[in-house]
Amino acid sequence: MEELDAKSKAAQLRAMLSGREGERHAVILQDFPDPDAISCGLAYHLLAEEHGVHAELLYAGRISHQENIALINLLDIPVREWSDEEFAKNRYHGSVFVDNQGSTSTLVERLDAAKVPVLAVVDHHDLQNRLEAPLFTDIRDVGACASIFAHYLAEGLMTMRTSKPEHRRLATALMHGIISETGSMIRAQPFDFTAAAFLQPFYDIDLLMDILHQRRNHKVMEVIRLALANRVVRAGLCLSGVGYLRGEDRDAIPQAADFLLTEDTVHTAVVYGVVTLPDGGECIHGSLRTSKNSLGPDAFLKDVLGRTEHGIFYGGGKAGAGGFEIPLGFLSGSDNEELAQLKWNAFDAKIRRKFFKKIGMEEK
Ligand SMILES: [Mn+2]
Image 1 (tube, protein in one colour):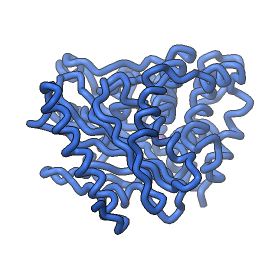
Image 2 (cartoon, rainbow, N blue to C red):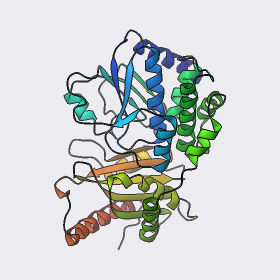
Image 3 (cartoon, rainbow, N blue to C red):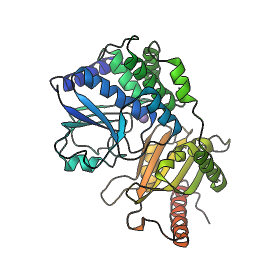
């Protein structure tokens, strides 16, 4: 059944791409792209190229995780930060969302405003209903989005050759996406394993090692230290607020959550902080990691945090992991130290209260 379905999706994607020669597509990654998203973007870029379509990988936030920077540099992946002129002058014929459905990208409204139609969505998160009727949709409950693209390749959407450096780089990127997204295959499903088996003859072992063995920088170590010091654990739920962070250090948050989850009494770790955005605004970013099978991060975060006045959920997730973003709006901006501290204390207390209330462990 899975195979049949995969076949029809690959064929549908081919049909969507054919006859579009000369078009330019915007591949939208989440604001803080991870290896899964980046590798999917690269896969679409190369698949599109086969059909004479030029696809550009764009994101609105920042790439800061040392592993991701190494991935982009070592594999020469053409990804760049979105800039203001981007959607003007009918630059793009369509947009493509990979590893997200628009709910973790601030580019959706800008694409709407520029009347760029959504062509395709390929994702493995729960259905978000954020995007209007794409021509092609492939949303599956699998370990990594990169596995979906690997299956397209296995289905012959593009003939992979070990003699082609760009194909080896793509296989390496997708393999890295699968490894990092599935906790080194521990959370992988059969679909992810068959994807990895297909990629194996093509990926570059030395490059993959280089990307995986990036060391943590000082700031990440510092955020982990703060997360450790500030953590509160109740009934297996560990919460930790790390205060204010620069945009470029935002990826320290999921790394701190990964680390807090390694404590033996903890089944779920949530780390959050106030991140300064490029436009000077502020936004609370949080990451959830769980090893508890009965806890679905998507439903849990939606339930705990609710939604904005526009009906958009503050958070969401997939098996084992989730994230949330709460814009501070009017309360954004640099304040004097005292006001900044008051502001942090209020948000920190509010978030802790909401999470602990959900598990029946309200703070006194
Ligand atoms: Mn993913």
